[in-house]
Image 1: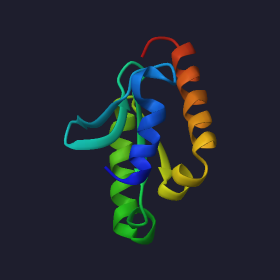
Image 2: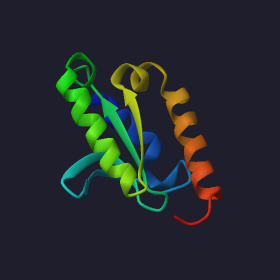
Image 3: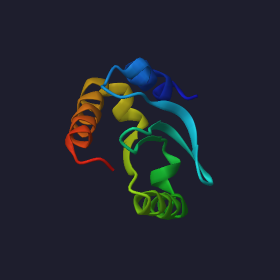
Length: 106
């Protein structure tokens, strides 16, 4: 795990944000950083390669589209966001978790 992943995991583990997350979870042919199956939410922490290379951005878009077809929402955060704005990242995740818990069952 990267330092940003370890930092965010300290806030996601043990249901601290209202749902249980799994680390490095397989979804079909993909392995996602964090997954909350109860609400079909993926959290991805992206390093520089996801933004510096067109190929990586294209792959991410295809992956996100494939997961969306299965009604799985993908939230993406950058390494610097997680390291410098941890509280804001967690607040955004908590907001999405809350909204998805209020929705009709998936």
